Length: 341
Ligand code: ACO
Image (cartoon, rainbow, N blue to C red; front, side, top):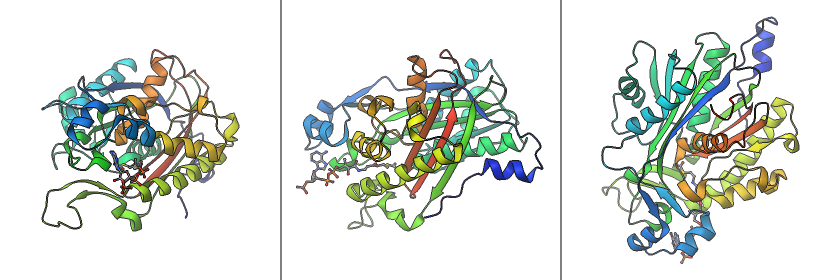
């Protein structure tokens, strides 16, 4: 299966050796709702057990947005933190990744723009489900490398608890709410994005979708997922794309300081790490506390790792994601921000 790289080497060649700006993550922000939905809470809602959930997924609790705590509200909080940490920069564009927007239109990006008191710059949403943050970064990277923008705000915000079916034990235990944001720009003192790949295969669109149950086409719409098929495909895709972005960046997986994968299920991450021969002490995991937050998952994990001081400038980081579409994506970058950013 081909995965189209945004080939940095090809762009450099096409521009006749002109130095192309390197996009960097300059700062991060995050927001999690206060309300915790524990496995004990799930036991009271559906026929499940803490033991089953922990053994099959690694999840112990997730966050649930309060009424009114929409993706744009959470996303604006995360974005405000990221913008402040980047020195209150005014971005040239706002890109929001979400698959659980509070309204079909206007876009969540425009609602966040309004809440931040910004205006004028383009603002738009993308929907690549759990791969959305890396898809958003790939657009920001392309805008910066082509000099269409100097700074781009990439936000990922999800309220998945509003779209899961709380009568379906095989999906409702997995998902949580939250938002995170990154300011992408240049000049942060070295480092930056080395390789990016985004891919999709609509032939597997029915693996994970929002809609009615196949046996009840007129019934309620919610997040539906074929768990086993998703699991198998996810392990294959993220292992493959991790190896590809490492190769694109000229890195061997053993050189990578941190793997920050989409936090869907600890077993998927462990299976992919085993195939890549990466020990779990080099993998950032927070799925136990936040569950699967779809597009917000990778930047939330990055934010937590940065805040705890684990990410240091110059470290090599690989992120991989997989989600509805199906979509998948990989990112290789060197950490730029100081722990405080
Ligand atoms: N509690 C107790 N039992 C359960 C639960 C539950 N919450 N959910 C399912 N079961 C039962 C099933 O009914 C089944 O019972 P049966 O054998 O009597 O029929 C049994 O457990 C095994 O079910 P499986 O679906 O085979 O369980 P599996 O080990 O595959 O785990 C899971 C299910 C956790 C969903 C796993 O398949 C998975 O993580 N899949 C990938 C999810 C994912 O990565 N999604 C990412 C994309 S999300 C997005 O894009 C928005």
